[in-house]
Amino acid sequence: MPATPDAPAQLYTIAWLGLLAIFIFYLVVGIVLRWPVERTVRVIRYDPPQGISPAVAAFLVESGRCERSFAAALVSLATKGFLQILQKADWVTLEKLRDDDAQLPAEESAVLSFLFPSVINTYSFNGSDTSRLFEAYTQFRQIVHDMATPELISTHGVLWLVGLAYSLTALEPIVFAMPRFGNGLSLPSIGFLIVVIFVGGSCFVAALRVWPGTLRKVISLFPGSGHRRRPFNLNDAIPIFLTATALFGFMFAAILTSTKFAGLVAAALAMNVFSRHLLNAPTSAGRKTLSELRAFREFLSRTDADRLDHLNEPGKTPRTLDQYMPYAVALGVEHGWGEEFTANLLELLQVDQAYSTTGKFPASDNRDNVLKLFDRNR
Image (cartoon, rainbow, N blue to C red; front, side, top):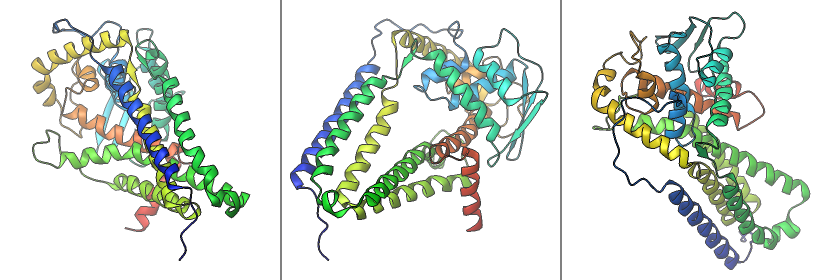
């Protein structure tokens, strides 16, 4: 079988060197943005920083991710008596106890408003019914992002766009030098190739959102991991499905162009996806707040960690919620009920976020269709 016409090998060498240079650029910038500048001795804090809610604290600690932040907001609302968290088997029921007031942070007030519209005072969800939960999370995420950015954390979007532009520049010479683009591919074929790359790339990005939750379960199985063992469920098949779909997409791209070109596109996509979160870094005010949060976390770890771990049984309705429980969840101090609740919520939200990037249909509908597909094949 004759070899597929391809661009000259030296162009691929130049392109790979270009991507390597961009990767080093991302890495150096990420390290510089996070390089510690404090030189003073840290003093233990006995209270959280003033004006920093549990949700904002988690947002800072997680470098701009909001899943733990959302869990901390729910626990904070329960601690303050605005809602009750009830758990039974795989179902979680949130029961609204009273309306919000002016003392609630904006993000917590938004959670109450979107979870309990009109006169509805209860909301239940499990692994296959999270549509309203994800809608509330989407609104919550935007509010927290607007509150903390750019005062406490910066996304450095301009730097990322510069790297993305140079990535495309590295691919451009190969596209124009590839014989198949010149005389072997019709316009419909080129359009199909673009669609294939888009679908494969979307599934790849979606898979990256879901794999962390499954990998945490794998890590929890190892002796000495320090985490409670978490069983696998049908949601853990979703990252495999998305990864396989992405691989098929890039395989079609390789057939239409060449294996080397498809591999180069996949590498460029992976690098830019990973770097997007890498460039999220605290501002000078954010670094000061993070230092205060670490000092407060040290206090919680020394004095309350063991008590909070045994306060409530994981997977069941909490008997009581300590005033510091929301911050313990936000800062990753509590490893009992709160961490289990956060891990389950994070898994559901990551699945929904993954499927919100793979098509025009609602995230919960996409996820449910895939779960039904796997369920029929069991």
